[in-house]
Structure formats: structure tokens, C-alpha cells
Image (cartoon, rainbow, N blue to C red; front, side):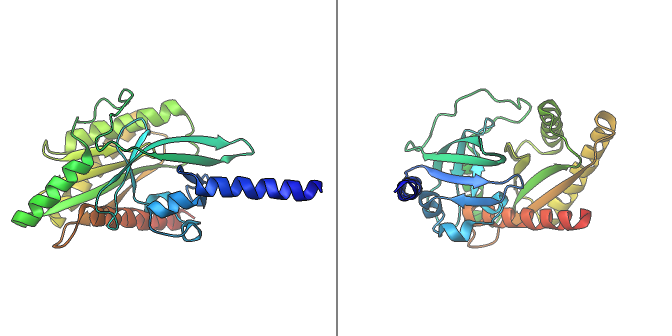
Length: 267
């Protein structure tokens, strides 16, 4: 009788989590999806089983603040972005696993609370609105438009919060110095930076990537000479018929491919 009660209890908890209006996802220390509930999968127009094993980088969630509290779900399947409140916690039974909670914010323009940690980043309107505007201009005038995702990968065991904060500050300063005033920079707590580059061709973005690499190398050698690192870029360029969501899907996919190549290189 005791075993039956325990089984029913576990089954009920699973069902409660699966029908919750919160989106729940568990990531391992490599940021692979271990489990998600039905609501989370529904937002992605997918089944929960299909999402298991996917890397977080491949999912269409983008931060809209520097405190990791607000996210926006933007993909080619959605006509309008979905604004989400986010918080997370380590699993007590396994600290290598992190539970991420997402709650839909019904306001179209949620107030972003909390002070910015990276004050060197340019202050811009919501980057989703900025990207939508630039996509609209490209459609109207056939202007080139590039979207990059930059990730600073540190080797070894850089667990120090202070070190990570200093690295992120270095990245934000270099990007601010190297980009034009018309460009837009966004940041996420996983160490990725989203760059929206109006009127930027493939050749121009290649030149910009080289400039950023050289500037980062110079600063790293001066400030963190012992730290091994690499810089990884995902890249997408607007073409006729593209929406903001489609561009973001492609830049995420490209960053994930480049990350996989980097892992193969160092294995």
C-alpha cells in the first residue's frame, strides 16, 4: 500500500508540473535540456520529448535585460514575441542541474526592473523592436543587415564571479569601442552578445569580426595574460522574405555549429 501511495504521489507531481502555466526546463552543466514541461514545449510549437538533449543556444529565447530576469521568445513560428519573466535555482539533489522557470508577462512593454550591471553597454530601446525596425527598413529599401552573436569561451576553470564580471566588462567595452553608433548591442548572462548591424554586408561583417578579435586579443594579453580563451561568432544576413525570428533562428543555429566545431577542436 505504501508503494502504491508513493507511486501515485510521484505521478501526481509530474502531472502538476506538466500542466502548470509556468514554463519549466532543466539544464545540465553543459546547458543541454534534460527535461521540460508541456507549457514550455507548447511555446516552441514542439513536443517535450523532441526538446530533450537540445542545447540552450539553439532555443529561441533571448534576454531583454542584463539581470537575466526578462526574456523574449522570438522565432519564425511566432507572429509576435512572447515576453517572459525568468528565474532559476540549482537542484538540491544535483547542483550540476539548473531549473529555469518562465512566466508569461501579459504587458506588451514590461518594465525592466533592476540596475544594469554592465553600464558600459549603449542604452537602446528594446532590441527586439530595434531589430524589427531594421528588418522593415531592409524590406523597404533592400538594405543589407547583419546579425551576429559573439561568445567569449574561457578554458580551464574560471568559476570566479569576479573574474567573469571583469571579462564581461572587457567584452562590453571592446564592443562599444569597435561598433558604430547606429549598431545595437545586447548581452546575456551566458556570455553571449547579440549585435544588430544595419547596412552591413558579408564583407563588412568579416572585417568587423577581425577587428573585434584583434581588440579582444590585445586587451586579454594585457589584463588576463594567463587566461586561455577563444571568441566564437554566429552570423546571419537578411535576405528577402526574412523576419526577425528567422534571422535569430539562423544566427543561433550558426553559433551552435561554431561552438560544436570549437569543442571538436579541443577534444
